[in-house]
Image (cartoon, rainbow, N blue to C red; front, side, top):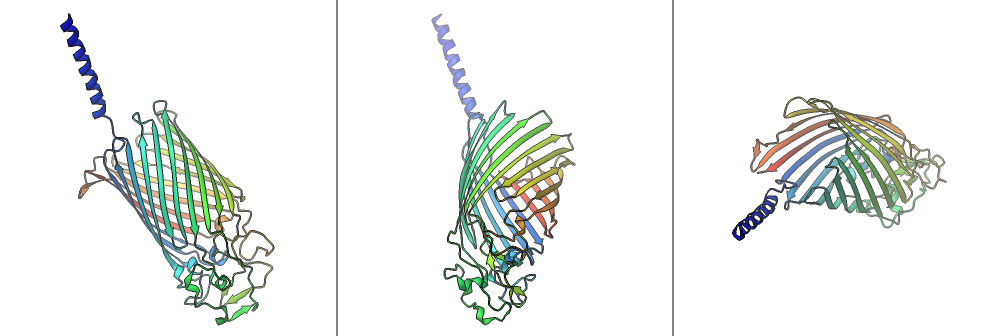
Length: 437
């Protein structure tokens, strides 16, 4: 009897350790292998309401973007994501910060000024940790961005909770961005500013030009003392699987911005001030001036319905409002069409409408007695339509290889965007996902 009891204890102990080892060995990793995404896009736009020239003039712009995203499993539970983004653009409107640098000074033509092109660089790191049961996910984020007129540092994090057999998901996120502006003013105002950040104005002198219209040019201009802009955001999310075919989610965001929220090189023209010109270019009466505090609220939802093996319906709605007087509605629909096991088509449509900010007025409409003013048509009332079409290729086995990486998916998409205030744009984007062997 004693020997039999010993044998039973040995068997139970062995079985217990086997269970523990099995759990340890067969625990599913959050990310099995390193994944690399390469994303690129080409964007072009045109319009006639450039904020740089006070709400008139060319908005022609082209932008080429490339991004590399690397996701690396650090262990069974943790994933490190590194995102490097580069964006190179040429802009006819920003070149008119100095319209007198070569060619004819005309708001509807690009100058050859130094601001005609620039490079934006962003580096973001995200560390994610999942609990053993995969029902709790924590993330931390740090980012750095730089462009010719600003530098930004951002950090934040999120927490996601899954329950009800992973049919319900709750999330909360918070982010902080600390930006510093370089105050580049319109070229004609720089002689009035002893602390200009732009060294290209050394050779510019108003007395070298013939001023027509009102020859007694006397702009209303004071440089901005505060060159920082801080943004704080809090986001809440709720997602629920409602049936085997239906999934819905709700999103809420609140954002506060403090500091220099104006763009220093956006010109303003007053209706009650006589016009002064050099050639065909209207000299600025002032620069855009906006409150140093802005509070934004957004509430939205998604509803996705699986129709059958071929069609899926994806819908989205978002309401936005802020204390500057802007209110907007966004609605979109996408219908993925699976035409084969590996290929899916993505036709989509998006509609957007917004009211104008309290401080917006078109070209030469503001009065010099106002405290705040902008002629940036991004803050005007408008509605916009966007039509898109994409195609996706997916191979979960990643049979096609490039060196040590298998090609897991390719996504190609085209979007055409059109506003009722003359702005239109086209976007072509591509994304390639590779998985390391």
